[in-house]
Length: 389
Image 1 (cartoon, rainbow, N blue to C red):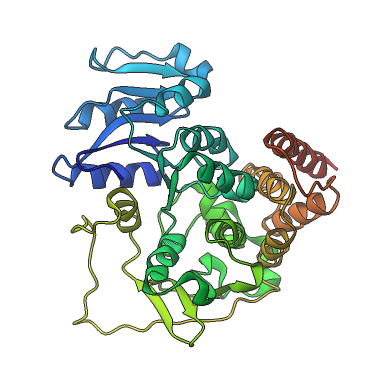
Image 2: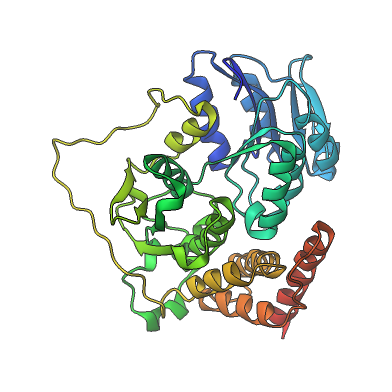
């Protein structure tokens, strides 16, 4: 990592991770500079972010070219360059004046830009778990080839990354990812069929976008995190477990061969793992609450119910077989979640739709990137057909 100031490009700056990243940058006293911002179509917010930064970014990018072509950019300072489309974004994040790329575009849409950053040998602060879910072996091989560094922003994977520093990697027995359990952790299983979109979006702990919030309710987010951890930390699927932790204080744990468990704890605020990725290996005071040890509280750890959360079994299955299965599961889930949010399928149809598509795809154990992208498109079309029929 370069010395300070570090120049940051934020891909997906209008989302929850992007907004938290900007909060960290504003509190850094000039040690971190946002040199580029991107959004898909929330362009009013994108321009507002550019205007409010103490150091004006060099460029902002709108990846939806249709919306960008109709938008009035006149409120921006004349020094800010406006880019349109994914190709322009990928070109600019590879420039030498970008030190760290925050990959926070939700879903598989973030794969191509993250790939471009890794290809350029950048440090990538990875919030887009789909990059490793879809193309884990290819992405990690690309990072080794170009000497790129991937630092996790997801609170769970950041916790594992921090805990691993307490011992030797060869001595790791297993990692334990924690999950809040979402809003339906205690709802009777027979009532899940009647869950509404509004209920599913009411997460008890985290403030996230709608897609990620629904993934938390089905625990598909944890299934995807199992797959991500398998590639990011070079583990076997049998070394990855999940526990339900409603308080979201313990973010994950690592167990070593001697039985020692190392856990990372903090209040549920994404600014801490974001800042750790941007300042690694340094630690600063973070603009977020600290633990209050003068106040009593309890921490619960519960085994997940496989009947309530069948997505977890899919996550372990895909982590075992690899190949094209990650791309298919991720795309099917994105399409099914969109169907639920649009009122076309029920809450309890999301995981079965993913399972059906996964079981019927043309599996390739050693796909190319082009094959993975084709599988992504095929899986979305299959879910659309599944919904129609």
